Length: 80
Image (cartoon, rainbow, N blue to C red; front, top):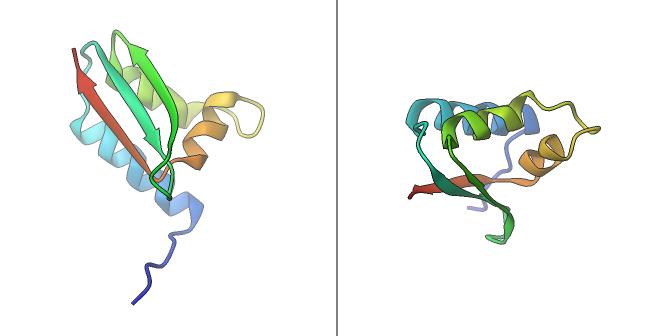
């Protein structure tokens, strides 16, 4: 059975919830991964959770951060 794509609002809510519930405010690197598994964006931050949450507050389509997070199917991070 083929996977069914979630509506954008629901997908973004799930991503936001994942970041809010599991990311920590520690230095690290994060990656935005597209539906095809391609890395759409790589970033580095002193406070990973705060930085990732800022993507969800960005104004769409005006701000680059909002456009990037809408391309993402998953967000990964690792701490340094």
